[in-house]
Image 1 (cartoon, one colour):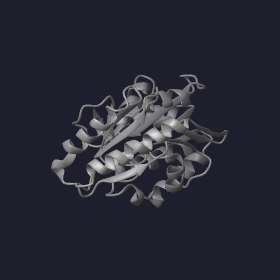
Image 2 (image 1 turned 90 degrees about the horizontal axis):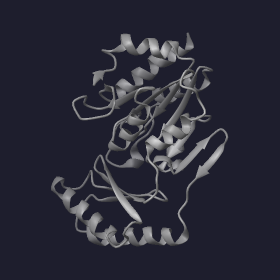
Image 3 (image 1 turned 90 degrees about the vertical axis):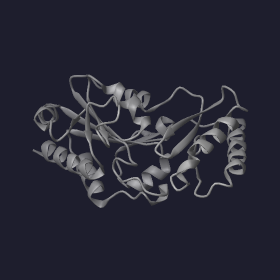
Image 4 (image 1 turned 180 degrees about the vertical axis):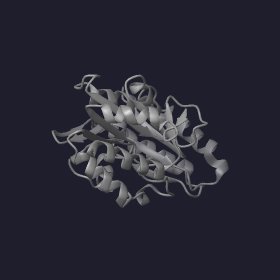
Length: 261
């Protein structure tokens, strides 16, 4: 991977020449730093201002694609008139309306039982936090003792064995996400967003920082610009990297300046 700004002479012309720039952005760890508890991750005012300016450009589109629940994501970002994708693609809102994939009542009951079982198993571990996102349950262990991660994973695996072929879990930055076994991820969601555009009129740029973003990086490889937010030394399908959300802010500032001129 190349640092995006060090390779700016090859990236900037693509952004400038594209008929339409489509910025697809993760939230936590990308637009805002990772914090101790998810409810504390407020969108920085500078980011919000740039998103509004890019939204108003006739030559740019903006979508926020997150593992957060849709309503939580919209509240955190607070920018109207853009596309929001929550729960990795299970929920979507754009100017045309809201689309949700919901769980049946029996599946909702299963997820409540899974949470109840995990709460009982993980009660002895301090710092565990459960985040209910509707069809997805996230177990946060960022504030738990470092050595507890295997214990948390073991508990998740044991509980889900009681629901074979119905639930699965994925990993992220100090989290385990319990998801229904459905065919969805950020890469499929990205393709869904891009399907109505031709390759010649659109330049998609995807920025993300976590394992769930790798599907999106692969989805636009060869078509757009996949950018990892984090250390450029980790294995990734991204072509470029930015070190942290402060560099993402600078990137958005450069994009807004290019598309304005």
